[in-house]
Length: 186
Length: 219
Image 1 (tube, rainbow over the protein chains, first blue to last red):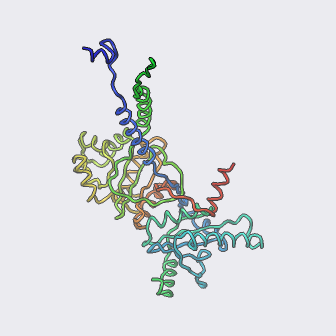
Image 2 (image 1 turned 90 degrees about the vertical axis):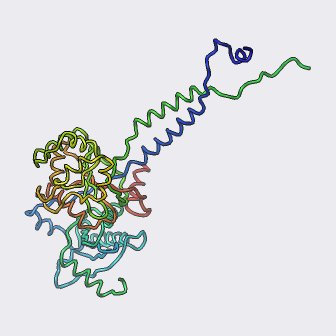
């Protein structure tokens, strides 16, 4: 009897130690906090060129050769690129190879191209309304990751106009010719 | 001997208030959590610098490494209507249980011919079936007979509010022709704006976007 009364008597409120309960709650809170923040992947918005058979020819002629850069995505995450849109059959463009890299990769190519266009505008060769236009042409050996990376580079470098277009047989020949010319690169 | 005795005080603190508080927080987080929808296949998404959120009530097209296409919608009311419509259109003769199985399930990666048997399976069996599922038949046209993805999208967009935004979750190692099929399908349906689901990566310093983001942050 004496012991029970020492703990507050019969009328006293029964006390439960809530510390383990609090511990458990914090554990659950931590779990839910992590799941809420972690399960939010990001989305990258894509606007594909409006495809209408009638519009095609007009659209093509709008791209100025000096302001254009064509990027061909190929196997092993390789990027072939050349200036212009490669529509002159007599004069093959100078096709170069690069990769997705932070330094010395496709990013520097785009930055340099932007600078070159600004120079041409100040020289009066191009009008001030002309903007860098990048044509992305993935071939059948490139991956979805390459495409997303390429589109991402456009966002990173603030390329005003870019489009994903189907690769042409001419472009495939360019890739073949470049590979043949540089057997060491393979 | 001094008569004053220090009272023996217990060091234990009343935890009731603390417990209330933590439960409040816990409730908040339980309410705020939206669990990841079940994934039919493992998809290793590429990363981009984009910080956009995925639009609500979207149509998810999943493309795995081998080029299989899965289709899912997360709006349960719309799902019921979609499966009813498809059942009628394609004369699949689905039972109510099979329809309910579609509504509860995650995504569809089988052609219409296999749909009935797929929906009869238990969720655990479906997960197993997804590993060998051939994926939705897809090509570059908008033809509903050969391109079943186009059919699913059209039906789903009809029943979704605001037309339903399209999100593509494609594996980084998927070959371009596979992703091109999906993009071409969307193009044939006159959908030119859609989202790629990506992981986040940092903006490399010294680039145009980096300058732009920091300029707006400074303002």
